[in-house]
Length: 157
Image (cartoon, rainbow, N blue to C red; front, side, top):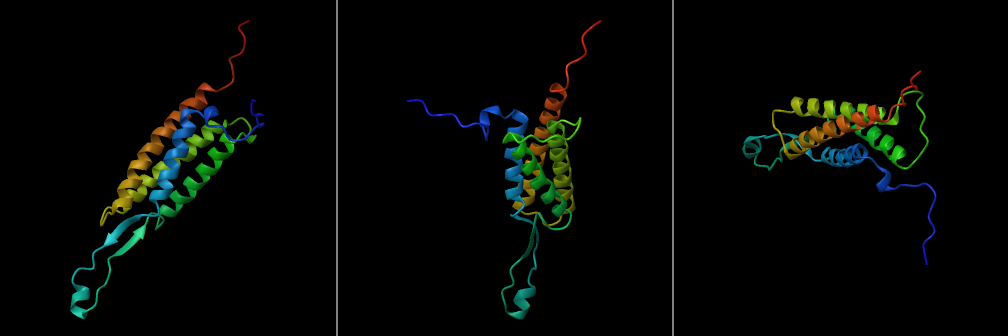
């Protein structure tokens, strides 16, 4: 007996490669933001006092990373709404172009966040850089999809 089909909802088969790339890289980038990005070695200062002082670290949300964190959350919400089939109308702007801009902006601020934390890099910064590059590539693919999905040209006279 065949299962009844649900109308609407989330279907991975309907998603484009750009959407899959942006959502996948966005989720991984968001996870990397919670790892330590910057650290400071306190050296022998604790030995002088006779106590053990752990190294100071900051995650990816520190400083300009907060903008990157807000952008990646906005990207995931936007692409999630589009993938779920929610009718999102932004006038003449295509949803694919908005996703591409959000992905590109997230990647830009991710690279800036990496560059501002060059002293004392930790594993989260390197992961963030890799996922920012992946976001940039996915945003490029999504931008190409926005150009391909434009209106048809007018008929020849």
